[in-house]
Length: 332
Image 1 (cartoon, rainbow, N blue to C red):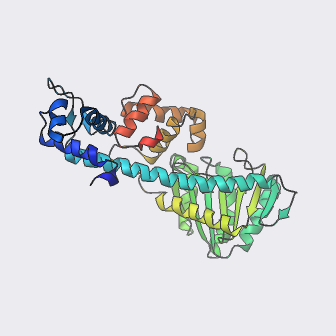
Image 2 (image 1 turned 30 degrees about the vertical axis):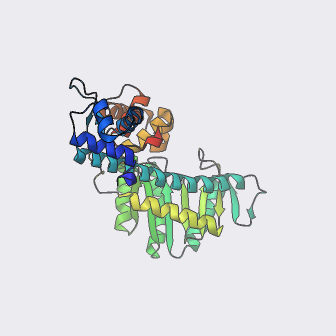
Image 3 (image 1 turned 45 degrees about the horizontal axis):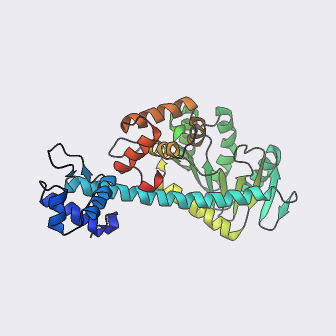
């Protein structure tokens, strides 16, 4: 009955018996269920990993079942974490495929080839983006990772943005959540809103990207240096995948101007993304870059997570995160 929530039939049978007969020990349960003691202990181990049974202080009984209401909430939370992790993998796969195409484009002869046009240096990129904007007729979709932009860069972008919006072009941009603490960016976003632009934020973004009219996409050749070079992609399949990636992240992103969402444990999306990266072994510096924050802020977020999870190590933090339903078991 609960297999969809990750609890197999045998373990569910043991869990129900524990609820019905809380005073039974291993021997009594084994006899009651006609289940060999070795198999019963294996079921108890599985229930323990799911945090559905906990140590008991009662003499002669080494465990006690979690209340059904709390148990079902925990299983549902874990399943939601697994679904979110799967969606994240799909999005990451799309981004990785697009980035591979972009990087391979740098190995081709300079200029345009079928489906890909290589650009080298900031001036060439700037000129090509200007032509792209001039030929856009309907929509511009943008991922803008890297954290806060300088006030000068934001001011310089207003002229081209005003021209696009004045022509009735739909402009949708996703920044990092970290820009919510940067006043020049907030002022720029307010300007965009007043002129018809739409802006949302996400805790992390997979790649810097601009898509025009769902026909052309511009990605950097080197994710560490967007000014070094770029590629303009027109492969129909790649564009479709990049548009799907954008729409998926756009739907889950928060409009800038709304309050930061927190789950029932008080965690923001930025906290949860940081937890994923911590458990993947990323350094504070790498996490800071992904989030668009300073290394000091990344260390503070990590400390907050460790405190919330009552963990002394990253491995222990992973185990507690799974037990709390913050992460699927496959994440550690």
